[in-house]
Image 1 (tube, helix red, strand yellow):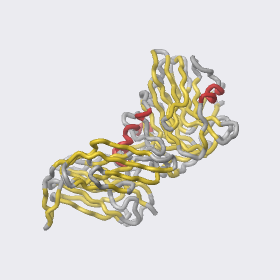
Image 2 (cartoon, rainbow, N blue to C red):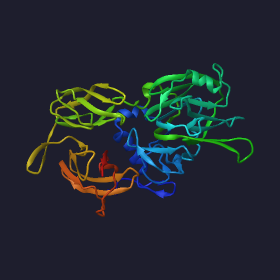
Image 3 (cartoon, rainbow, N blue to C red):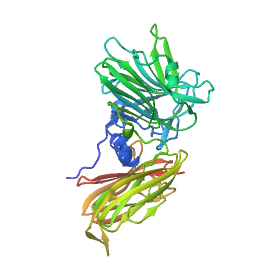
Image 4 (tube, one colour):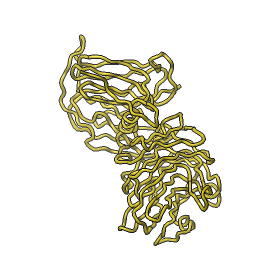
Length: 454
């Protein structure tokens, strides 16, 4: 007997339907499959896509959701929305995660710094490193240039540094200064050299800017503070705090040392995914641009003589073969091209019958809605290769069911529906990211991301 599709986990005492499942599918589909290179295997991911409330959802484990402190403001980010920090008490505070260790760790984030509030430093990320006799902290931050118009990536650890000057001047000497008010990808990598030492490397937009080696016992990760330095000093109650001023997007932790090739894409980098990547002809493929938001033009070569300049095109391959796909982009960071060789595989396909028309049918598919972004309405098409019971639902990015668009036992064939941007009560929905969720009683499940404009 068919009893439905998705369970409803509880997040911080709030019953939010399928939020973890939905966000994980958002990672795989909404951000583009190519970007999984920078997310796969992460122990914590904060996307900052909530757009409301006081909880920063951890897409990997909701036990490590963060509390958004003080102002709760979202702005346009590198991928969807970003969380804004005003440099004065704004922060995200997260419980300790035992999976985070200091002998193998990578911290990544997109940042858009607008200034350094206290003319000292502006904190991006702060982890309490707890170990035998060592309650010290690792802090990733930015330091100002004397002219006040540029910044350099830095860090602080109250542990012996063995090959460079431990003073901040040593870090500044080797760092590279960058202008404010632009988006950057930053990363800090801990790579174990031996049982008692680690190599710490700074990267900005995938370029190595600084390295140093520390003597370090194995330490477990404690509480996490995003956008804030929280360091007890002296008597209980006396504290040191610094805050981040700017916007932050996609803060990601891995419990291993990543290489730059494994990072999330840098600004201006061509990146994309596709779904499906194989199947019988004619095969309709939805291509998902995974390039950051600073990219403003796209040129696709689908490998079969056809092309497109859409951001997220849908292309139908009509004959069998293996196709190389090329995406060329341009934006504020300049041009870039990504080639994925032998990326789409098309085989000879069956033909199904739906109504009075003979149409090609290939498996279980959900096409990208069109138009996307949209206002006020958009069309969504799904394909069934065999009769089955399905449910097509629409969720907001927080995992709340907005609209049950279609449900029931369906014959094989193609089905096209229109969503008018309203919920089941007829209320117009706010602008934002919405997820089309197609599920089958046979166990198939596809999610597509859409953007509603107002």
